[in-house]
Length: 325
Image (cartoon, rainbow, N blue to C red; front, side, top):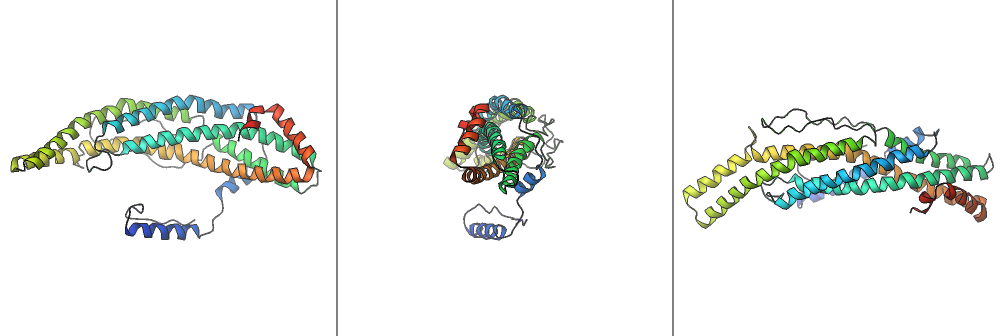
């Protein structure tokens, strides 16, 4: 496809808004094969949707959610400290982004779990519909494609195509803060280990740093207010000294150390977790669309009674998936 590289932030107001609109129009106007349909075609010969495959997803979601709650709780704790936030030039502003990712990923896991249970029922219904149709019926191919679409969802969970995004394993800050470990997940089930690592890093490194930063930030704010109320040279010098102490980029002082620590967590959330989840959900959304259209066509072909019978057969086998919307 086509990519547009920006120097400034295109989401900022003013002239960038026009650039952003033009870039979206340019990229959207270029035709590109859907990676979703490619994944579906690659998974044409299905291995079947066993209860073990479903349980691998649902159990991972159950074990991951408490860890995500810990991550979000830690991020909320930092946000509530109000250590500058992203509106302040000395703010350690990645805290709100980490909190937003924690909340979003929690919702995504719930949706993926729902898809896993629902698609087991849908797959069983599609198999029943295939049996009800004549062997040479043109709809057989569409049913095969719909089943392959469901298979692509489970396959996407069982083997991640690693994105290769590198997260630095070296601590360039020269401090005691060096929160690095094995955080790459190769499958959906391995995400639990990654969430556990992030939760530990947040609690043992990120939150303690933010609490320490708050004391220095508050000292700077107090000095700044003092200078505004009493604009002497000595008060201005005190403000400048604290500003330099906090914001020196090299050797890094507290602002940049804090940004680096939080970005480490945020990069893992973005590139080693959410990137995969978004791919899985994209495949699931496409599969749901294909299955819905295929069911409609099959119902029209075999009639309401036959379709209801095939649905009932699948429902008896997988009742929970049959009632999920």
